[in-house]
Amino acid sequence: MVIVLAIWLGLFAYLFRLDSRLKKLEGKNKN
Amino acid sequence: MAWKIFMGVLLTLVIVLGIGLPMSPHPQTWYELPVIPGLEEKARIIFFHVPTAWLSTLAFLTSMAYAIQYLRKRDPLDDIKSSAAAGLGFVFCVLATLTGAVWAKFNWGSYWNWDPRETSIFVLLLIYGAYFSLRSAVEQEEKRAALSSVYSIIAAVTAPFFIFIMPRIMTGLHPGAKGDPNGAGPVVEFKMAPPMRVIFFASLIGFTLLFIWMFRLRVRTAQLEQAHHAKG
Image 1 (cartoon, each protein chain N blue to C red):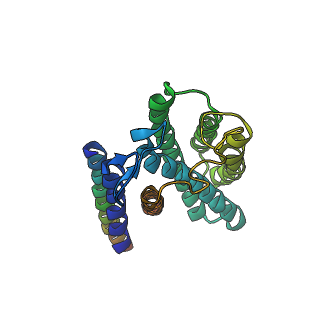
Image 2 (image 1 turned 135 degrees about the vertical axis):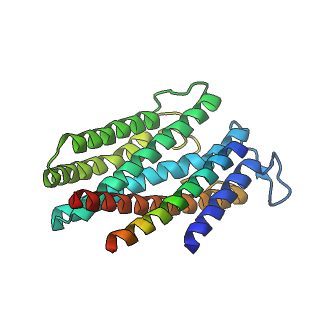
């Protein structure tokens, strides 16, 4: 369970980071 | 934002409860999962195997829908969405194959048995693998989009046959195969015990939301890539 949970939480954190980085890049692109 | 946190909590709960809840031959409390004869502890993988297989179907159908849209309106964004959905469908198809192979090893004694459902997912992987080969083989953007849209439609038309029809008209190891005395299987006939059913449907909802999030991220990334290339 710990391994599956670690993989999932890692993926979740990565997706959140990607989401916020994309937001920043989209903002730059508009300007 | 709120729905992403909801999805994160939901899938975390599915992992913790689906793997962590105790199993008992005669459940006395709400948190005990029943022991299914022949499956025992291995039954837990159903919370991950079926949702990944479901998502690959959803993704391939989404890819087809955007492919049709592209052919009608010729909007490059529809092509981006169609290929993003096909890519995610392929990833989830691989995950369904891997989780299924692990389950098969411990239940049927071998990672691969050429059961009709295993054969059909293998053929689907080949079909969608060819989709990406096709995309990478054509350099001109409009031509690539048109060709891959037509291919995506044809590929998605075959998907329901491989996923829903072929495994049911042939004898095999999966539940719901031809001649199975238990009929269409526990998922289709809602034969699961209530606590298992709650975790199973929570997993389906969670995975579907995860797909929507990943799909949007992939589309936004591709749009930024395109804008970057256009700027030179």
